[in-house]
Length: 135
View 1: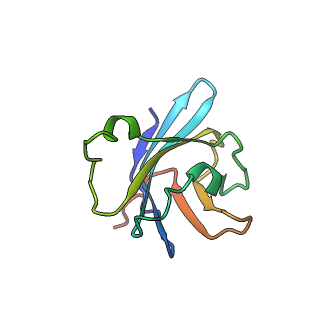
View 2: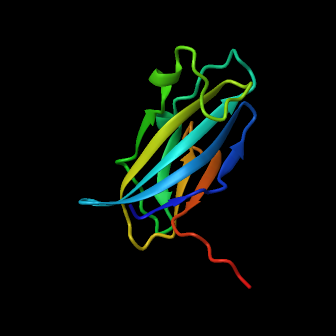
């Protein structure tokens, strides 16, 4: 494992709130892989859960785009039948596990772009290195 980060990447839209809860960087045989836990919540219970894979795309600060970006619903089978999700909320919420493979080793950040209709609505930027304290 290369490291674990807790970024402060949050976007509050009109209907949905997207937040990156946790990030793990892994050294794999094919290169660096970023796995992150994305939380999406919304106030209106009549709205459908968003399809994170269709709404998001990823790029790094060096201009690389990541077409091998994958998303999977997180923990849904385990918690659907009666158990609360970790950090339970009174709002409807869904968690997604996102994986970005073969991350450029020189990249400083990965940005998840909320891009539902071909126009970027929001950016969730994830630093790939812990910031050092100044002082």
